[in-house]
Each structure stands twice: as structure tokens, then as C-alpha cells.
Amino acid sequence: MKPLSPTQIDHFIIRGYVKLESAFSAETAEACRNILWKATQCDPHDPGTWTKPVIRIGELGLEPFRQAANTPELHGAFDQLVGAGVWQPKQTLGSFPIRFPSDEPPGDTGWHVDASFPGAEPDNYFEWRINFRSKGRALLMLFLFSDVSEPDAPTRIKAGSHLDVAKILAPEGENGLSFMELAQKLDALPECEEVLATGKAGTVYLCHPFIVHAAQPHRGKNPKFMAQPPLHTRIDFDIEQPEQTANPVERAIMMGLNR
Image (tube, rainbow, N blue to C red; front, side):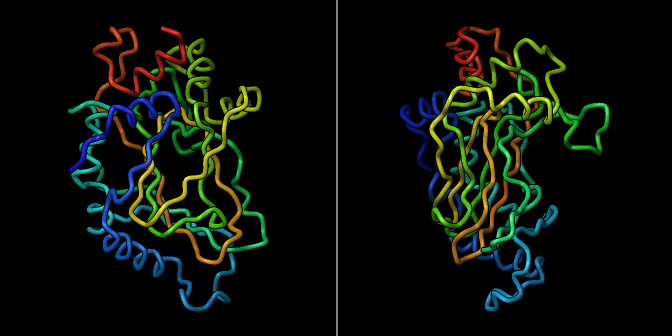
């Protein structure tokens, strides 16, 4: 297991993400992909069966997905970015948005920040909330189960946007903002470089929980298989502590707030 370098950690703090190549094996990625193909009820050899721009598959607690989420490389990176004992191990990877080549708009390409704790309507995700401590969420993670090149609908990331999101959330206190309330404020943020989350199957992007990101239409040839789960916290982040003792997630929030 190769630990994250100081340069990678600085990149995470300042740019809001770090790319881990070969975070899990190509063999595990293929096993996951085979399961997801069956779940879509599409034929991998017949594009005529790919009739929707995106098919969402619910949680699958099967062994290949547990293997992908629990490699020594990932656990080591979690410890470095979040802190040993602060994060909760993953048994599932949430839902899977499978994107197919299509001229039909997928309808889910807006810029947003993922919410982390329930609001007044727990069953309504758009009412889930985000606060300046990132209550409940340590990271956004992008798991690539297929090779993803630029035409293959890679997730778009606004590098450095997490610093500006911290500024938006700070005045809102512990209750924070709902998913939709925050999304409506993102157009006013300063311009950020747009980065595409491309890579080989087995790549994982570990992103700051405040990073602004979006899906996009698939203009390539090969369907894109991925998951985008959160890494949950065991304890809340502390952004009042000295910077020397803070983890990189906390240090990024402090940087955004000029603390």
C-alpha cells in the first residue's frame, strides 16, 4: 500500500479531490460490472437494448462491491484524509447511475453538492441538508467500474469550489441549507476550473464533501459504470481546533473560512 504523498494531500485541500488509480483491481471492477449489466436487463453486446440515457440501480450488498470499497489503498487514504477512527467502513456503495450513449437528455446534469443529513422530510432527498461541519459526511467518492474517457460522460468537478461552498454554509449555522437551497446559490460562485473524472476501471476519486460537481450526457460508445457513495463519519468534524491537529477535510473548511 502506497500512502498519499504530501503533494496529493495538498491537492485535496486546495483543489478538493485526489485521484487514486488502481484503488481496486480490474478483476473486481469486471465482476461488479457483470452484476450491474444483469441488473440493467440490457444486453452488453446489443446497443439496440440501450434505450435510456441513464439507468439507476439500487444498493447491492454483494461481495465484489464490498471488496472494491475496502482495499488497503482506500482505507489508508481514508485515514490520511479523514482520520483513523473518524470514518465508517463501507458495506455497500449506494446507487449506481449507469450512463448509456444517447441523444436524449438524461435530465440530471445540474451542478450540486451532495447533502449529508436528513431534514424535516427524510424521504425527500432534495430536503436533506448540508452544514459547515459537513455533518455525517466525510467524503464524496467516485468509483469507476468501467474505463471512462472524455466522451463517456465523466463526472464534472469544479476544482476548488469546496472552499467557496464553505463560505456559503458558515452563516447558516448547524442547520445549514437544504440540497435545493444550496444548489440555487451555486451560480453565484467564482469561476472554477472544470475537471473531468476520467480514468481506468478501478480508479476512485476521493472528493471533499463540499465539492461542486455534475453529471453530463454520454457522447461516447461504451456505457459508463460507476458509483458515487459518501464516506460517513463516526464523529462530527471540529473546525475550531488548531490547524496542526486538523485532518485535511477540516483544514480545507478552515481555509475556505480563512481561519
